[in-house]
Figure 1 (cartoon, rainbow over the protein chains, first blue to last red):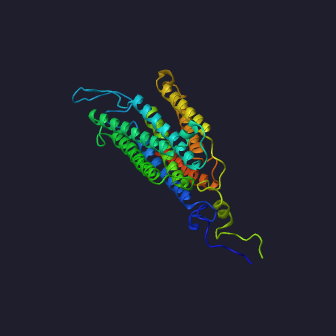
Figure 2 (cartoon, rainbow over the protein chains, first blue to last red):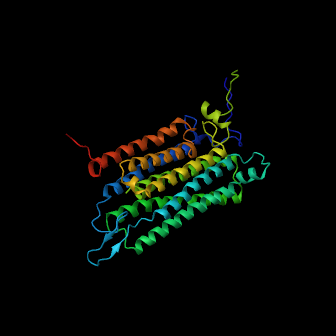
Figure 3 (cartoon, chains in turn purple, orange):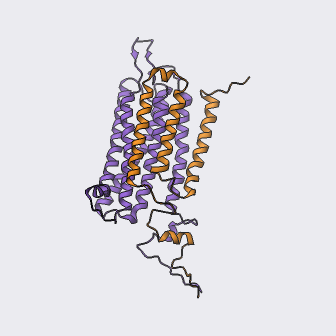
Length: 227
Length: 124
């Protein structure tokens, strides 16, 4: 005879339907499947950019100067590497803040004795820092887009403009969604507090955030650094 | 009477998981805070190296420039995926779900570059 209780202890696990037959939480399987599909999306955008690279008939160009034959105006290379390097650094740091936020939520119930442990265990602080870094990155991107438009590069100007704004714009939209997600988690943390039982919620958002970061790692090299 | 009677109606593996802290899944322990800081330092140093390489004209003109930057970028990508996304520690299925589509995408990218891009195979 097999005795089976129909309910789990509330403190231990979520509802049984969240598990796959492998014993993995289906929400985590779903986010990995989503990230896999997002890989394909971004590789298609990067492919388009690389195929059109160097095929623009008129400037401005990313790495070369261009003289407008009709006006004689000389346009400098349009990419601003120092600014983009700074925004890349900010996004890399946001990934660090995100893992610290996840670790803080996972270890919420552990006693914090020293000041350092209290800072590292403060999930609100790290979630806020991640959202702030994401917003700063978006600020850099807004600055970059605005300066490009002022210098004459729009999405309709040439092949470089079309593929560049599409690729980086899609990435920026993903960062925006990530920041909104983080702000939501931060609001939940302030409202009722995030504990270790919520760690999967933070883990899923962290996976999304790190994916946005790795996409930028590829974009930074392929679009900005390789001439 | 079955002395190993289950206390839940979950599959065995899920039952084992149910008694672990939520969010850990079937996985090993995640890295410590100090590991995360070390990873961040390594990522920053690689990025500094990439940007430095961009400003060395002789290196930019050399044939090693593009492979070096691609390698460094791939290294950063792998470090973030393994340590920050915990793919090194998580269940194998997650690795399959990520690397499978990534591999397909990478092969598609290569094929497109051979067809329409700047990569050419010299025949004869």
